[in-house]
Image (cartoon, rainbow, N blue to C red; front, side, top):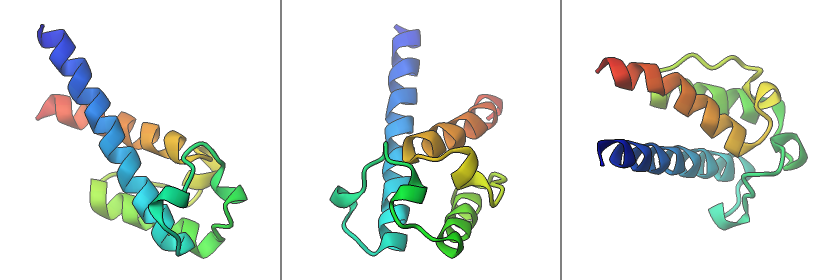
Length: 96
């Protein structure tokens, strides 16, 4: 049962991270969150390099992790970025 609760909390955490990234991308694209597709590469959404760098800074500030300015190229979709963030947070959460 504990393993199931752990898996559920990881799934909820991943969804929460993805929602946060969607909200930030919507901010940079100046659109509604429902118009943001987490599976489309950000380069195809019209996000420019200044916004991509801003998003990296947002990730660092909000999640307290290092995010290289190449984040949107290394992890091209919102789902990829959310998975990256979750992967960076997992060791910190286990240590806590």
